[in-house]
Image 1: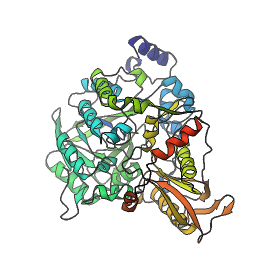
Image 2: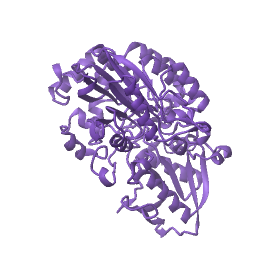
Image 3: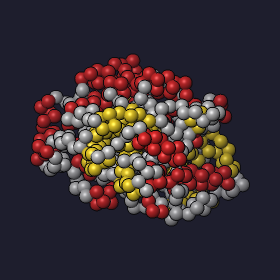
Amino acid sequence: MDRREFLQVLAFGISSGVFRNTRANDPYDLPRFGNVHLLHFTDCHAQLLPCYFREPDTNLGVGAAAGQPPHLTGEALLKHFRIKPGSSDAHAFTCLDFTHAARVYGKVGGFAHLATLIKRLKAGRPGALLLDGGDIWQGSATALWTRGEDMMAASRLLGVDLMTGHWDFTLGAERVLRYSKQQGNFIAQNVLTNDFEDAVFPAYAMREMNGVPVAIIGQAYPYTPIANPRYYVPDWSFGIRETRLQQIVDEARAKGAQAVALLSHNGMDIDLKLAGRVRGIDAILGGHTHDGVPAPTIVANAGGRTLVTNAGSNGKFLAVLDLDVRNRRVQGFKYRLLPVFSNLLQPDRDMEALVARVREPYKEKLEEKIAVSEALLYRRGNFNGSFDQLILDALMEVKGAEIAFSPGFRWGTTLLPGQAITRERLMDQTAIAYPMTTLTAMSGATIKAVLEDICDNLFNPDPYLQQGGDMVRVGGMTYACDIRATIGSRISAMSLNGKPIEADKTYKVAGWASVSEEARDAGGTPIWDIVEPYLRSRRIIKPPKLNLPRLM
């Protein structure tokens, strides 16, 4: 986009009232507030270029979390946060009228555009820190093929001051340690060695900003060896480690920290519980669950109050937290979660050149067209997404399975109707280090046990027992789900081709992304080599019929 086109888009947004009323009618002109400034992005999943990303239509909470942030979507979210329907924010934070709105507002994110915004905000905020909540080294074809080297270079140029991680650990312990030493900015209080419980990474970092000592504590994803293969980090243990966190907070305060922030990859529900139990944290800058939450939730605890935030995914948002710290404590704050509309931000030339350079060896391969979609293809949603459905359909056809399971990952870009499905877009949905597909004989009883276990990971009423992500996507069979029930009683009415699934009968079930060593050693066909020929054979992809459970 040239300068003229940029001004035309900006003028349209202002004249039509679709951009928020900020100073000088510029959506990115935020007046400085206070003396401590934290910029935060998370879960970019290696998306270097602008993309489309549809927010979920379903994000159910259980117990006290039902109907509360982050479990709000669509019109309920707009009403709760008083966002004008049809506005740019309505598009950024919801999936309402997504295809039309995406054509109006364009793509989001992109490291060159993010770099421009960060430089602009830092220019008016002396000493501002840029914090990355993790999941930066995984999620794209180039990140997979370069083993994160492309994102390491982009992160350095972007100026990330501190980061923590989750999917990043699937590069393997040795590489993560090497990268963390090269960068010198990886923090995680909750990753210890198995043998002597020594800290693997620094727990926190102290920085002085405008005369104010600030502590940033790192919190990596606590269930990494469960959600991902343990064999990548065999000698490390993870966990929430609430008691240790309190000790770290107290230590940082004793060393003079007047403001303390937790850079967290717990997921927002865990962070909300944690905020009520650990005193002395002023703000939790959260990630993992990909919740784009426009305003913080304020949680009371024994030490006062803690702001809990979550900053979305895919480079779509940049959070700006300004704190007014006086008399050794936070007196006030201002927070904005800014959508990064690439049409409104000139790309940073240095970052644009770096992105082009790291992509160049793979450009032809990335841009090869596999098929064209007539449907809106997306992933997010508690129970299924249209791109997930394509993966399920491909698994069943190619593997000759009656039933298919596909992980409820929350990363993966969106394609608008009429767009080409290139190899890059396919890899956006599948680029993991353990892509092996499987075909397994499962009894009906085992199928139910698998669904019950995964459902409990998502809908357990205790946030500390939730593991994030969405429900496994299911192809072929149908079932009913009661998210309010207890484990063992949530899944019912399982059927295949109109007949009840029998507990002692065996069924052929296809899947991928197994975390077991057995699946790794078996060396099944990578999922992209299953889905690509399936798409090529059709050329034109019709809107898939989503297989969704009946909610009770």
